[in-house]
Image 1 (cartoon, protein in one colour):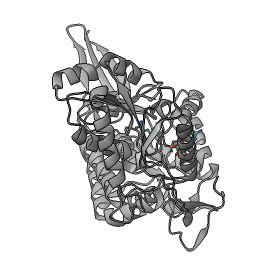
Image 2 (tube, protein in one colour):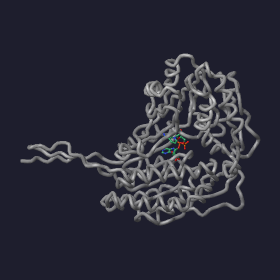
Image 3 (tube, protein in one colour):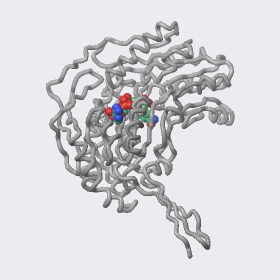
Image 4 (cartoon, helix red, strand yellow):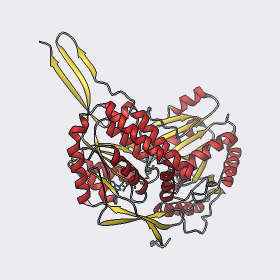
Length: 481
Ligand code: NAD
């Protein structure tokens, strides 16, 4: 185990503030932020307590009436201005994101771009008022109204992208927001808050950093009307219990253990290249990363060899180094979890084809590791590993592969890899997940709903279905005589 007291750099970056009621404000308390590439504290930011949260909620509550009476067009215009501001500030923000999160700079830039795309596309969707009945007797209309104050709670693996979808959805539909980033990656979100403070009317956007307890207070708060939560299944269950105290609406986007099933008709090298990226992007810390690969016995050895080659060629390093393919894990808890999974895997007798040895470093580096001949009940197969350790499992019968892929508490996404697209579609539709792809993985789009089956979540983000999750369906019924 690592020493729990990280070194603190002397030139700490401290120019961070909360955005509460349209004003950039500090706090009496501070939080340290570690750069996972070095394991050292490189920045310090304000830490909100109950008082700051209550001020933010009061501001969001107060501004709701006026904001919800603005038009969709006006709200879309402000989101556009904000998207433009993000574009103008993207370079330094991506660098800050890499410093706090660890991912390679190119992926940090892509994260901001993806988030901007969500904002740009979501704010073009028409939320219609629907006429349900219009006859001689009655006129019945279905409208969608904003809920009020939406609390947005984000995870550390992609704190900007996973904030921008909910931000756009909540604001565009006429809600006001309180956003809390995770304690280990609060910085880029706080900088985003400074930009938003200047663009949106006072009180509409409130962003504050804090510990897990602030998330819980948000979920329990009587004046927050909805929680949009992205994070682990374990925390999702706690959020659901907290929301129950006030019967709050919620969207829970939770963890996954995505299977990819590779059929015998593919080119093993080509598919191994794609699946290596899909399982190790962001060092495997992606909800829809491929986390288990089932390969037909006919091509199992060739596929494992090609995947091993990919792992050996991938460069592990500091995300700020432009040659880096895979950065460090984001935090020490995740790093220790990966170490334990690796030890457990080694003890299980599975074959480690690439990686497997954690380098001596003060940063949280885990090399891409390919594991073959592992049993279905191993922890690495059963759990969401959230690191670049990838199990490859053999199958001979496709029905057996589908059953094994479905044998999970998770149901976020999955994929089938084959040259036979109609067979692929038929098999993909048998996966018990929220999204199934053929010959791709991770391709979420702003105009397509995204959400988990089973314990991977409740509700959806993105598309008109996602937007309606931030609204109350309202029926107006008027007699004609
Ligand atoms: P986490 O659940 O530990 O934390 C997420 C957020 O919840 C943080 O901001 C944290 O401070 C807050 N929190 C902690 N305890 C809370 C409580 N009791 N009440 C309210 N909020 C609380 O998750 P993480 O480790 O930051 O993120 C990784 C997990 O997120 C993985 O499981 C990953 O699969 C999942 N994830 C899911 C999606 C998706 O869209 N389905 C996307 C990204 C990540």
